[in-house]
Image 1: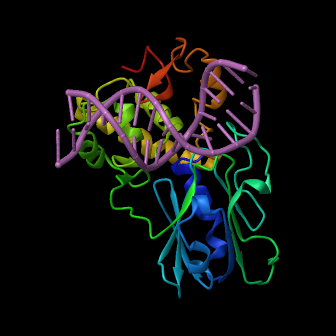
Image 2: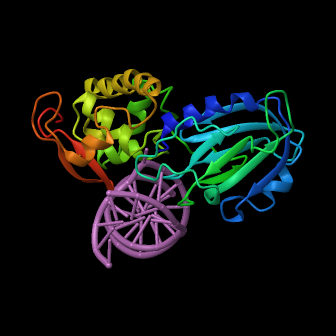
Length: 264
DNA sequence: CGGCATGTTTCGCC
DNA sequence: AGGCGAAACATGCC
């Protein structure tokens, strides 16, 4: 489930943590840097941020400045016992505490129960991870800030399929498999097109589709709430726009759904 | 049981 | 040197 939209939803969910102090951390050592719990114990959370698919907790008074939360394919975030996104379409809807990879406990404050972790990173497949002071400098422009000139720069000189380029976090940070298919569908561009073959108008259209669709899907609840929903992806019904059966294939090593008629 | 899954990293090949 | 594609990773679910 985690793409940039989910990361943004979880970033917002983390806002109530600002001002609290981490009194304990329990982590699965396999997904955390060495000594993570000892380093963050005593940290005061001073802000929350997000870059691409990474949620960031700014921390003070410890030997680190930021905690990075990465969700892999099946990671999800539970804050103060509540999951902002409950439904995992491609994973179980279960919330098994055995899958908790990170638990942060904060000091008791009004309205909170200190026995409940303030934050849980719950991830059955364990492809997510937690980091300290993650290097974000290699990431491309964030998907929420992206404008046509950014996209133009990002795609220039790339001979790979445009979909592969969109999935590359060094090109654009925050687009995942579902969002990439979605914005290509809306902009009428085939995922198979060479990235550097898009003309200015197509790049403007793609950037515009990203800018318009993201807020809508964010309001609806995430990457699964688009025209190419998981149901559509599995059934490949006629294209909502022109009635031609949607096509399924593999692009950039990922299952890709597109309309062979209006996406050119 | 086989295949598939919203992601990233690594390796080998140009 | 760096872009590119395939494989690997780990585990649950249909």
